[in-house]
Amino acid sequence: MRFRPTTFAATALAVALVSSACGSSGEQAGSTSSASVTISQANGTTEFPVGTEKRIVATGYSIDNLLALGIKPVALVQYGQEIPTPWQKGKLDGIPIIKSADGKSLPVEEIAKYKPDLFAGDYYIMNKSNFDALSGVTKVLGGIAADGEAAGWKAQLEALGKILGLESKVKEIEAADTANVERLAKKYPGLKGKTALVTQYVANTSQFNLVSDPKDSANALFASLGMTVPKAVRDNPSFKTGTEGGGRGFVSLELIPTISANFMAIFPSGATAADLDKLPGYATLPQVKSGATLVADRATIVAMNQPSSLSRAWVLEKIEPQLETAAEQPAVP
Image 1 (tube, one colour):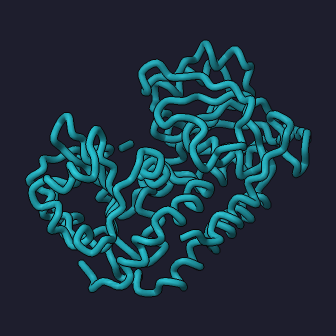
Image 2 (cartoon, one colour; image 1 turned 180 degrees about the vertical axis):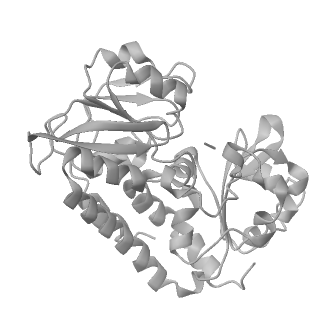
């Protein structure tokens, strides 16, 4: 896992209007500069020339970051969720899509054909091996950190702003994202002090996993609403396995009764909502009984696990009914 209409999307999507020129931006379009900027990232330190006139290939949440900045990549790499996502529809028309054969490696030779000045990819795909392979072709920007919130979209967006000379645009995007969240928090003040979980059930292995690290980028949205990961999950060492020990490892179904929360989004991979109800302890969880559980599709769970300013605006609308219910419930610590 490495998921009532409002005005949430309006502000964020307004800053995502994309220039029709590939690799250029409406702000300072075609600008070049002799300046450079040094970015420290998870896989090392890289010096980038500054300017908006770049041929960029992108993947993961980097696609959303570029769209929000008004930059249209010359090609995209698909390694998991199908492109375009629901929040990208209409913004990627005509852009070639390169598919990763195994969802883990990057097709370096195919990427090189587009003669990119920059490859931007999220920390999920930009491991050391992929980073080094692509560095022989072009400048590479991956996750700014290996884990925690700094591994997520916002830290990379700020780095892209420096590389492209669009730091003022970054501030606009972040302000719009903050306004969306604050509007929801104000509308449902009862969310403060409540708990939330993002989880997945995998039917063919009879296991599930969840994001237990409160600092993980998947939990940042809920933290900004005043919510947190349940104490029973945070304190259970079984949930601290997985990526960098951050809590994305798979555990047995016998732990399901221990994941009580006020809100939950769960993606049933290879299963249905009816299948979830049959799992021991699932139907009696407070978030399930209250109706504050969203049985999510893949796109929704990806939006939560690999967030961006665009996907956060989209997913807030999707989960608002369940959050409204959660706000009205007694706190599940």
